[in-house]
Each structure stands twice: as structure tokens, then as C-alpha cells.
Amino acid sequence: MSTATNAPAPPNDALVIRQLDAHTTIFSQPFSRGPVPFGGRSTAIKLRNGDVWLAASHPLDPATLKTITDLGDVKHIVVFDSEHKMFTKQYTDAFPSARLYFPPKAAAQWRKQGLITPEVEQRLFTYGTQGSVGNRPDPFEESTGGEIKSADFTHAHVNEVRGVLERRLSDLWRENPADCLGTLLNRAQDIAFFHVPTKTVIEADLLMNLPPSEQYSKTSARSTLPWLSHAARPGTKTHQRFVYHLAATNKAEMRAAARQVAGWDFDRIIPCHGDVIETGGKKAWTDTYAWFLEGN
Image (cartoon, rainbow, N blue to C red; front, side, top):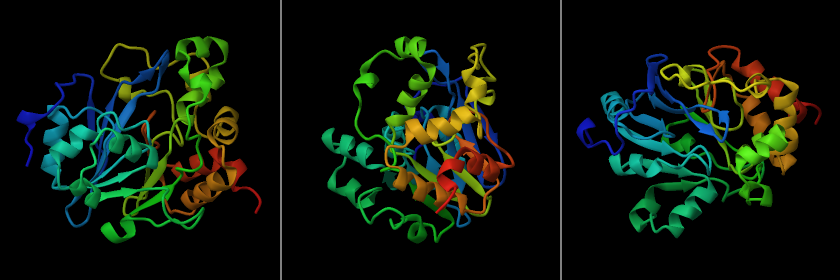
């Protein structure tokens, strides 16, 4: 088992580790793309059988490694989307027996890099490769007995890098802030997760709750950006337009997955970007995805 002495990343003075309840621990830190402060976050869930489920999205520093190993044996490591895999290898090396759950683009990139050996293949589940919209298998029904549930958005987002993505974000921001924000989200193949006992949804780019106050609470860096930080809150017209016009290229897929999440009995949302929505998460989701949830 790994210990804090062999953490692959250096100590992080800006990291905020917070236990939300007996099951849930979050790891929050500053993170920006171009001029936009988004914040970054990983989440660890201690399941009822003592196993640890981990959504890893930040460097595995000594404090993180000690906190996670103190929780129990890591048996599940998920990649939120194809963009949130920068530090996944650090976690899979530290917890080599964990099952892995990847979106298709991330799995393809790992295969190209030679990281998916026959042994890793045995532990890997790739979303978006089986079934059809509204009828895709959920691996956590078997592996956690349904304590964790997931919704597959991997075919609801742009899967190819458009020409605009190759331009500098700072240049794009000056020209059109909405396109800049859409650029960041449209590269993803997202998956949403739900921890049933704590009524908590855990997700990355599907819903943001800016500004990222907690994630910047240990740094002097600015956590807000005029207009955007307040416009990118759940339920605002900007956020609604964002998910409907910029994030979704397959609206049937997005509608099916958004309705699946809306059908879960949750109150809290832990986003990668922005503050935790401690209560009222269901309303935040249904307000933001209202255009997908309306009608038949």
C-alpha cells in the first residue's frame, strides 16, 4: 500500500481538505484556464463496506495521499471526462488494484500511450461503448451494489477538437467570453455520479457554481472574473444557454442523461469547478437543464 512518503506530487499549501460527512471528503485547490478562475476538486467517498470510491482530479500530494489511505482501500477510480485525466496515472500507480472507469476518449488516449496493459484492461470500464441513449449499462450497479450510480453524457458533448480550440484562450476570451467558456466544456465527455446514501451528485463540467471561493481560500490569487463568475451560476440564463447551445451537440443524448440525473433523489452537488452546493442541488440541476427537461 502507498504511504505519504512516496506521494508523486510535492506538498500543496493552497490545498483545502474538508470532510463533508462520514462518507465524503473533498480536496479543493486553485485552477484556471487562461484568465478564467475555475478551481479544481477531487472527491473521495467511503462506501458502506469500507471501500473508497475516488474521483481524482488534482495532483496526488502527501496530504492527499495520507487522507485517502486513512479512509480505507481505494477500489474505484473514476475519470470525470476526457479533460480531467491529467493526474489519473498518479492515482492508478498509488492504488494499482482499483477498478478504473474512463470516458472513451481518455481510454483511447491511454491506449495510444501504451498505458492500458492486459492487466489494466481487466480492471477498466469504458463508458459510451455499449447500449444506446437512455439504455447504457451502469457498472456501479454491480461493483457497488448500486450505492454509486452514474449517468453517461459521453455522447452528448463535442468529441472532436474544433478549429477554435486550437487558439489561445486569452485571445478567445477578449473576443467572446461565452465562446471561451464553451470551448472549455465542449472538449469533454462527461459522466455524472450519484452517491445514494448522502444524496450527493458529483460531476465536473456539467454544472459549475462559480466563483470558486473555497478553492481559492488559501491563496491571494483572484477567484472572480467580472461578469463570468456570477453568470456561470446554476440556473442563470447564461448557464442555461451554455449547456443547451454550446455544450450539447447531441441533444437527444443530453436530454436522456439530464433527465436521468433529474430522476435521482439528491440534495447536494459537488462540482469540480466552484463551491459545493450543500443543499438545493436538485433545483440547481433542474433550473440549469430546464430546456432539456421540458416537454416529452
